[in-house]
Every structure is written in C-alpha cells, then in structure tokens.
Length: 168
Image 1 (cartoon, rainbow, N blue to C red):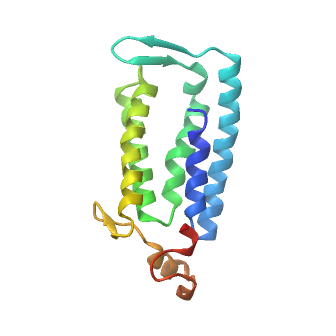
Image 2 (spheres, helix red, strand yellow; image 1 turned 90 degrees about the vertical axis):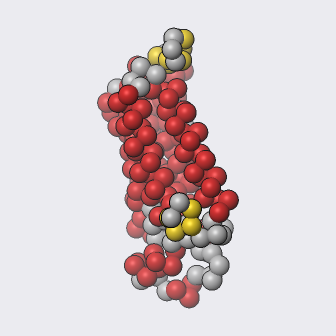
Image 3 (spheres, helix red, strand yellow; image 1 turned 180 degrees about the horizontal axis):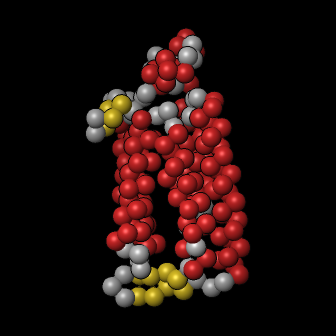
C-alpha cells in the first residue's frame, strides 16, 4: 500500500512516447511519491492492526481518510487513463472499476480484497507482455504507437517497424 501509488505512474511514464502525456503522468507520480512519504510516516508512527473474521481486516485509519484515498486512486487509477497505449488505458479503467467495487462491496476488508483484485490485474499485465508481439489481447491493440504517431503528428520515420523505440 505504501509504494504502488508511485510505481504505477512511474512505469506508465517510462513507456509513454507522447511528451505532453508523459508530463501529466509524471504529475501523478509526484502525487504518488508524496502520498508514499505520508503513508510511510503514518505506518512508522502508528501501529498497523490486522483482525481476522470472515476476511483479514487491516485497521489503517490514516489511509481511509478522504484526501489519502482520493490521492491513492488518482495516482493508481487515473494516471493510466492518460496513456497513449490502449492496453494501459484498459488497465486504468479496470483498476478504477475494481477499486470502486472493493470500496462499495467490501468496505470492511477493503485492503485484503484490493490485494486480490490487484492479483487479477497482474494477470492482465502478464498477458500484455506475453502477447504483445501477437498484436491483440482481448480485442485490444497492444502496439498502438502507430496510431499515436498519427494523432500526435510524430514523424513515423522515428519508429521501428516492429516496435516502439520508447518501449525497449
């Protein structure tokens, strides 16, 4: 919980070829890093308690406060929506939907359920890297850099035929 909000925008920013989108994503990384420092301070200063019931419940009152939760959702769920890659945007939409599902249906065991949903989303990331040369996974074009180049007016000659030079 302490580092995801800074890692997700960082990883997305590294593969983003479009400059203005990269700058927006780096802004979300700054939000994530700030929140990481706040959460680290809170975890060191206040004990983390876990309780067993039907689910494992973590008692982290400083995380559930609206500013912290809103910033966490912005860094982890909204940042991917600014990517020029269709698959990354799909990841962002699914992350946002699953986070709302966890918040709505599993409020008491939010963190345990969110970890489960994150594991499901990790399978999507695996599929992306496993099948990216095939071209499509679940009907989503994985290498969308050619359409991005056209939309953003990046010279197509700066791209390799097989893969985006920014995605090495």
